[in-house]
Image (cartoon, rainbow, N blue to C red; front, side, top):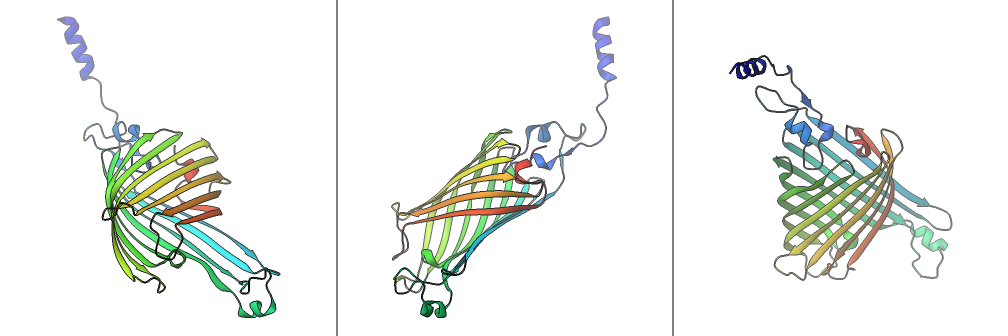
Length: 297
């Protein structure tokens, strides 16, 4: 009995550590919160974590230009921005690609004076932007809502406006690997270039996504993703977008990146090819928050 009283008195004399522990938002992953941040760093009385709002912005750009016997210029850029507060995330991303060249109109393999006088003509164009809101449900899950716009006349799209909703889950989370899976539904209003007989269409598609990111070293990272859209009204109509990116950090702000992207459509816009491929070498600037290659504490 005396032993029981002594243990009770000792337990009563233990006091909880004072003060708030503010969660380090660098431990946020794509759709989850670090275990320690969520469950250990909390007020001992109220039992809720405090999370500091965080904003990130990264911009990448690259291009090529050749003048003289040939004339061609291509500019390529992408951006990503997000703001996180509590269990919410608002993000946006975009891509811009534009190219102009002096064309070999007569197909003789050279650029003559007549073709030079005709000047530069547009030879590539792609503009797209997406906005997304995520609401986290627990540590590993979120639901999201997305809206986006695309212009890609060389693939047949004068305009493509789409809205999307779905569910996202963090499958693997570690210091070296992050794997994210998503499923959802996409509604798109497509307006085609004037050369296409059918001017516009509505597409209702089931969406699937799988993304994997691995940090090989403190300065080197590999990211892969594959995204699919299956037309629910015609299951033979499938779009697949795959991407592989290699990033190497140069400084705390700048990194260099190589990206290969392929987009394949089993039923492309009438008169256009089914597969597009893009290879880009860019310089990335991370202007807010830690760079993507050094996001963990």
